[in-house]
Image (cartoon, rainbow, N blue to C red; front, top):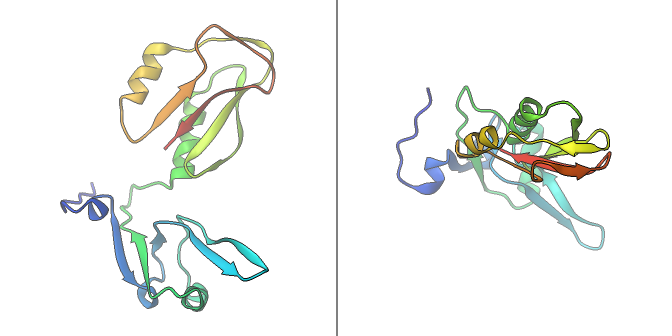
Length: 154
């Protein structure tokens, strides 16, 4: 079991600030954007990226002296991995996972034309767990192959 007793919100969520020079092996708590004037603006490092020794120089060139990193517990799972696992556990016949998870979200689509059936009690119980959710179209909705019918977020 991994407990965090701090009352500060960021620490309670398992986030801490450390010098970039001490960040090797830690997990980024947020995306880091890179801007090259007239060339590129986008994500240089993705939330959840494990910092490697070769990343330190790049981070310093981006002006990073300190980083927000996650306090990762042994049983923690990346949000994308969790979203995929949840979707896989929730889907039944005739529905499928669409693509790869992004930012802890993944879509569920109809594999064929038909009538969507949703176990409302199970869905409600799942959504009461907290920190995760699944949203779907209403039960007994007529759907077409490839139509978005739901999604999960972890």
